[in-house]
Each structure stands twice: as structure tokens, then as C-alpha cells.
Image (cartoon, rainbow, N blue to C red; front, side, top):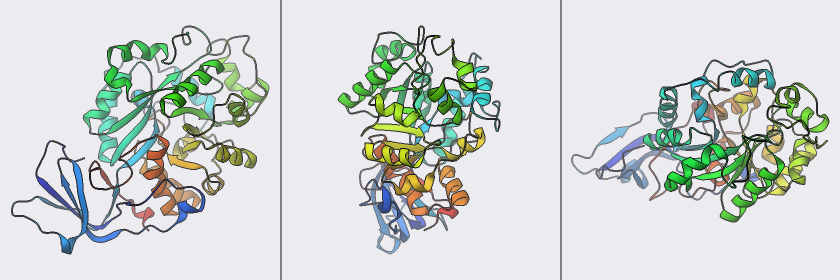
Length: 400
């Protein structure tokens, strides 16, 4: 992002600029409508804000005005990475890929108590900003303040999902809405609290009453409520039958010994708890049957797809075509470096384009206006006058 304190006029020229002006969050057939960029165009910026996007032939360049020619590329609005775990950046390259969800989880648990100096976090945020990320939805724990500082130091916006985790003390208490590991931090820093929302980890790892309370608080305050949903077959087995590797891993540690198995699939259980609906952001949605795709779309929820993380953890492939066509608001996220190789959310779109032949215009909307809508953001997803001058280069495989 160009520095907000720089009041000089700056001009950025490119082969094409896709400003997304007039574009609204899109679902179903609207996702696939053609997008039209402005060829041989210039982005005019002052003070880190967009002044205009114009044809190059219409631009008058005052003497001494810096002009950056980006060359033979298409510029698009800065991307929204709707789901990440920045606090886990120090685990990059050290967890088990390819052996299933619970095997990966066990390898991650072994690393969680390690001391680290924040170098990996700072580097991850720097790389994310360099990739043209405008805003990130991040799952937060006791590293909340360090994450907030690192993200904002790179000029990005952030929504912190303060994660309730577990079914018993010390994870759970009655101090709603903020979980114990975030509460004291937010009491000292109210200016950070405005960027936060209480969230659930997942149906199998957070007490049902806490999930309901967090969802209700978010509904009343107009903030997004997030939870991991239908990510793995291990999750489905735990919720349906109270068995499997994830049950063996969490029982007695995260889940109380007397935890009542709901005997429902994830979407059905989330519906029973009244967790779905407008304002809810479900994450992953891999293990979904056709009727569950329909139910999720009908609820008015949003879904964040994290396809590369799903691939690396060998949990399966989300029914992407059905999800995009269903009327569900879909967006994209990287997950964290514990389950991915980088945090460039554009590469999630490239993955879906190259592996599943998803139409590029649908993916561009997922990266921009849909991601902003899923996080309840204004001023993101378009290069419009007054918006932050955050842009990214459209990967060639997403050319329209």
C-alpha cells in the first residue's frame, strides 16, 4: 500500500486496471457475469487513497509527479484473506502434511507451547502485504496484540476472531463474550477490541452454549461470527458417532468425559444450535452433501474456502462448483502457515482455476467484494475514489 502520510500525487500505470466499480457481493449466476477492466489505464493516488482510475490518454501528469509503470499486467483491488491463523506462523514447515486431519493436529499440538520471538509473524505479515492483501480475517488467541501490531504495521486491515476453545476450564468460563485468553488484553486495549469478534473454533471443540452466546453477541453488535465447519471426515465421525481419531485425541483433554455426542452431521448440528444465518462465516465446508450445500445457502451464511490447506491436510475437496452455483456467498482464505506454504490468498484462486477450472471472474469476486462482504467490511474490494490504495497484480491464470 502507498503510504497514507504521502500527500503527493502518485500515478500507477498498467496494461489493464480492474477497479470493480459498481460490483456488489455476488452469488450463484451473478458470480459468473463478465468483468471488464480498463485497458492502458492509470490509478491516481494521494495520501494512500484512490483519487481515480482513468484511461492513460486522459491523464495529465504535473511536472515532478512520480509515475510507476507496472508494465504488462492487470491490477485489481487488494485481496481479502478471509481466514488465517497468523499466530501459528512460527510452525511453518514443521507440521505433518498428507496424513489426514488428526495426524496434522497432533503434530501442531506438539509445537504450541514453544517460545518464539515473533520474527515469523512479522515476516508472514510482510509477505502477505507484498502480495497485495488489503485485509485479513484472523483467528486470535493470546498472541492477539502481537498479531494486531504486525498486521497494521504493514498497512493491512484486520478482523480478529477471538476464539473460544474447549469444553471445560481453563478454556471455558462465564466471562462472555471474550474468551479467557483474549479478555485481559482487550480490557487494556479497547481500541483493538473494535476490530474483534468472539468466535468459536468448531462444533467439536467449543462448548455449545459458548458458541450460541458468541453468535448472539455478534448478531446484536453487527459483527461477523466465524467457526470451522465440515472440514474433515474425522470431524463428521466425532459428531455423528463419538468415535474416530479426533475423538481419541480430544476426549478428556478438550472435550469433557461426559460430553454428549450430538449424533448429527456438522451442518445439521450447527442448524440445531442456531449458529447459521446472515453474519455467520463458516470456514472450509469440505465434507458437505448436496442437501447440506442447499441448506447452507438457504441460511444466508457465508463460506470461506481454503482449498490448498484442504489439499495439504488430505481432508478432501470441497464441492466447489455446487457451492458457487448454490447462491451461497463464497470467499477465500489461506488458513495459516501450519497448514499451508504461504499466505498469498490469490494462490487459492489460482489453485481452483487450475485444478477445478473455476471461472476467473467468479474467483476475482471471491477475492474482493465477496471477501469484504463476508467480513462485514466497507471500503474494501474496489478501487474507488476514497478507498485505500491497496492493489494487487492479477495472476495470469486468472486473466479475463
